Length: 101
Image (cartoon, rainbow, N blue to C red; front, side, top):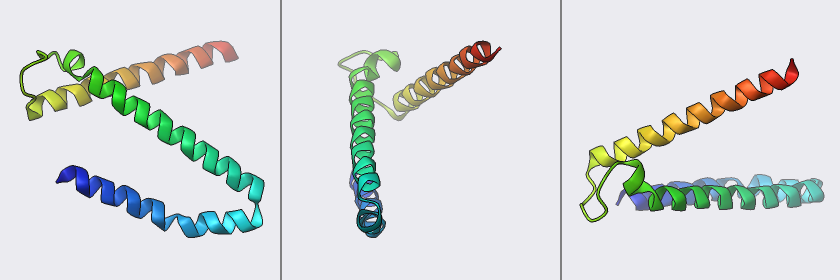
């Protein structure tokens, strides 16, 4: 049931942005086409991320493949992903700072 609520929210946000997209289509057609392409790339990026996380869920949550997942397993997965994300962001910031100096 939670998945259905999330899907409803995503569809509602998409529908709420349609008037703004239509206005941009009328006033700035090349910008509108670029926005649509970038939205498609973003959806592809998010979709691939979700697929990779679900495929690696057992490995990242330190869990056996055939055991059922509990809430703590998903919390461990979320904590692991957030940790790797923060570490990657910090390392990228350090590389950029080193490039500037």
